[in-house]
Amino acid sequence: MSTLTIVWITLPFFVGFISYLLPPLNRILSLGMTIASISYALLLFSQPPLTLQLLDRFGVTLLLDPLSSFFILTNALVTAAVILYCWNSGKTPFFFMQTIILHGSVNAAFVCTDFISLYVALEVISIAAFLLIAYPRTDRSIWVGLRYLFVSNVAMLFYLVGAVLVYKANRSFAFTGLREAPPEALALIFLGLLIKGGIFISGLWLPLTHSESETPVSAMLSGVVVKAGVLPLVRCALLVEEVDPLIRIFGVGTALLGVGYAVFEKDTKRMLAFHTVSQLGFILAAPEVGGFYALTHGLVKSALFLIAGVLPSRNLKELQHTPIHTPIWIALVIASFSISGFPLLSGFGAKVLTMKSLLPWQVIGMNVAAVGTAISFAKFIFLPHQMQEKQGKIQAGFWAAIALLIGGLFLANIVYYEAYSFGNIVKPLVTIALGWLAYFLIFRQAVLKLPRLLEQFDHLIGVMSLMLILLFWMVLA
Image (cartoon, rainbow, N blue to C red; front, side, top):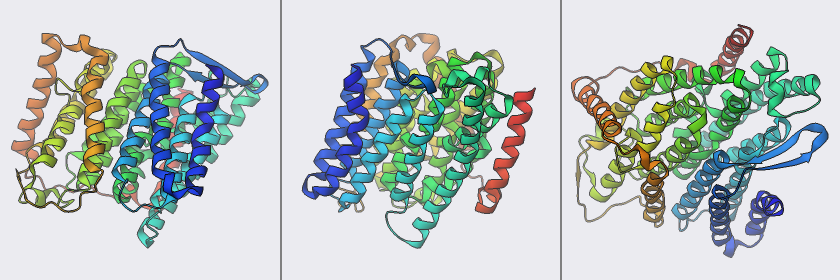
């Protein structure tokens, strides 16, 4: 199993470069790599946790367990859907190469349990993501990509200083070294991970980046890339119990912040981007069950971004007066039902499991966020629709990608089949009903436009400084 794991980690980078050198095979090789990752993730579920110590002296260690399996499976399914979506889109071999390299570097980040190898993986992710964001080579896409790269690299500078402090205190880069590390190490490392993961106000770079990228790139960014910063936070909460309350606080704060923006947003892609921020909060709010929620969110959010890319408009006000193609509306409704927590889809089991794992002080905040989720996606569910003879803007592989993602939502429903009790079914339905009622009475006609001041590039570094002060105060307290 150890040899298989090493081969699996290195294979995406080899396949990525080979696919670039063999253009006729780039799509087949890329899709084959995702199938290999799906197979490996499913194999991990049946195996005991595997720990690989690569450099004992420095604490460089890989951990493969059910938690990482959920994240790896999410990465594989989302990447496969993106490749299918782009199959006949005219994308160059360079695009597919970067997609698979991004897939491989995200996988590497998911299995690291030390700060130095995680640093390398996150930096490779930043470069690959930048190249995909800037792929159209327009002035706008290059600016958005450079903005993302600048914010990411500044975050990683803070992170690297924290990692060095952990090593100085323990002579090891292992996550468990946080227990003996000075408070400033914890604050610096967490600042880097919170920014990379798009958490709380340090994640306000995310809405513009995800909404202005090309549709398949948005699906990758929101579906899996941000989770490369989230899983290490979950790991730290599970390995170092002193860190758990801090992670849960940011989980609740992030869930409320993201949904607070999403309920008022009228741009479909920006609404989905803000909801990515909110849903990452659900993963952090209950770290011990975050893997299942990450799988569900990755499938749903990737499907929603792909669907948003074929809608007649990004403006929700215009969509309320422009019927969309009924099959597209059905796919949109299924995905919206899942993320709202409707039974028969994996979002239901994930939300029930998460809510059962909350601490008492988290319950009110997370229930408010759940109602906000129902409000947000009522905007999609109640859009007008009709059958249309011709429907433009749809890539040839669109339906294959959507079938894979939505099929995954139905199949993943069996992970927590114990959720299907009368009490568990009634509560999410009541939450959804309250959200829909609030939507029709208040938010459907609401015209409130929240300020975007903190999203502006010249304020993002200032926000980092404020977050660092907050983290220092929290860890010292």
